[in-house]
View 1 (cartoon, rainbow, N blue to C red):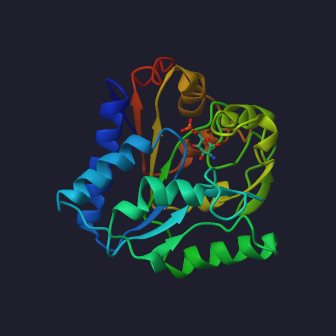
View 2 (cartoon, rainbow, N blue to C red; view 1 turned 135 degrees about the vertical axis):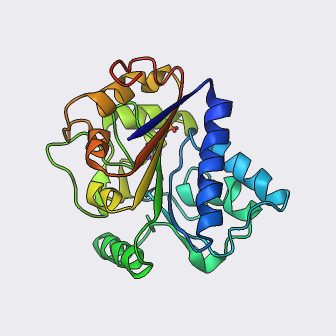
Amino acid sequence: MKIIVSADYIEMSRLAAAHLARLIRENPKIVLGLPTGSTPLGMYRNLVEMHKQSKLSFKGVTSFNLDEYIGLRPGHKNSYRYYMYENFFKHVDILEHNINIPDGNSEDLEQECIDYEKKISDAGGIDLMILGLGSNGHIGFNEPADHFPVATHVTELDESTIQANARFFDSIDQVPRLSITMGIGSIMRCRQILLLASGKAKARAIGAALEGPVTPKLPASILQFHPDVTVILDADAASQLTRLL
Ligand code: GLP
């Protein structure tokens, strides 16, 4: 595991974009796993800027989003689909047919999960998965549990996640209770992982995930078992790491 501690959010975002850009240049047909949330926004802004300056093309790139809320109407401003188009896809040259996001409005959610896993494997698997981190240690919507989910599945949001994500909604009652997420197994099958975290609110989860025991009670801790993980933190998120600094 390679851990990079940057000074602040701006530098973390620049380093994350540079990491991704390097891999796209090495393999223009790269298959990416993409996250949402506040953390990767700066990385997406940097990538859009690189694209506008004609320094980076996404034409050959295939993407798979990590997760999506269940039950938000199509086009809802809090859906992850909306977030991805607004913050990234509509500003770059990625091809529409190479974009994959779980459909949280599918009439058959179980089938949607099976189909999503099949699409990932038909694409040859994910080369680089980029992850944010919940303050309870969740990745995607894999919440603290008594087991590690193997594949894409429907899951209930933790009460603490509902509260954390309420800031994007008019009221807490509007936060969906369910989501579709890639499983821990889907994440561990990705060839490389880039984990991003910024801010004091993530410090405890980062400390536990990188230095504590591997346990489904802190889902991100499983990344200790992955052979190719890069972690980019800002100083606040790194502030509870001891051994590795
Ligand atoms: C959400 C998403 C995660 C994300 C996490 C952290 O619940 N499902 O994929 O990593 O929250 O979000 P933020 O970056 O806004 O702190």
